[in-house]
Length: 181
Image 1: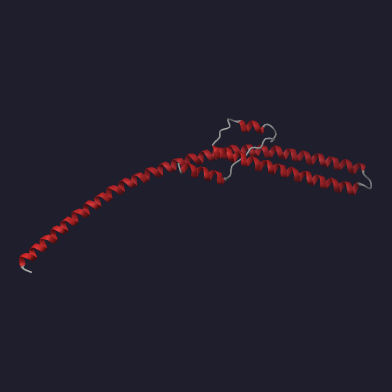
Image 2 (image 1 turned 135 degrees about the vertical axis):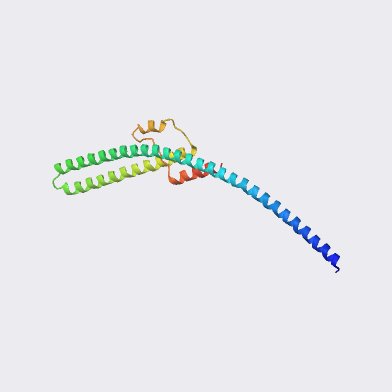
């Protein structure tokens, strides 16, 4: 190769290097600009998600508080009913013992079994009422119903109409649904 050709190759190489450097700078600038825009979008999205989660958490807390109060009232009423049943059974057993003689041993055993069965049934009723109430209230929370105080009115009937509470899974599912919108 001659000296002139070598100069030509060298000049061509310098031009390619300069073009490559310019292109690289342009690409770097575009990437920088794009990533700044994406960063801003991510930050805004994170703030929105945070606000949604906070609002959902507050709503869930309020619902749980209301449901817990209603469930507590229902359990209290059921406990009073169970207490009355035990008291009546005890009185019946005492009357039987007073009037008994030879029958006292068998009657006391029978009365104790009846008392035990009544207590067990009362406990099962309380458990069933609490479980049914929990499911119904959970459905209300999932559907986002506002009963306008209707639930409290139902509680005035001595727990005949079950009222429900919600569980953690329902709250978590509700938050997930809100976030997926």
